[in-house]
Length: 125
Image (tube, rainbow, N blue to C red; front, side, top):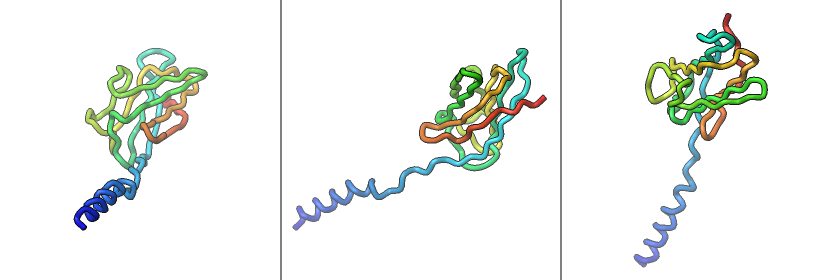
């Protein structure tokens, strides 16, 4: 009888993981703008966190495409700067990507599981 109970407990414990809901994907409101950089014909792309969930900085990738070119930026890259400097992208934070050509850039903010934001960069004059 004890053996049967132990087997049932082990089977139940092994299946409990399947009953848990999957992790929820983050939802974030992002505002993007481009501002003139220090080099002619280049701009800085700034992504502002305006509300929603926080995301670990190490999970973020910024993908910027212009024309037929595309480039990825991650934490630790020389062109990727997050302010304030902390380990999460949350309300009030901003990410600045420098040295992007000014013509028709599109930016995407992605995590390993989801595209958080995708849209054109509007340059402020």
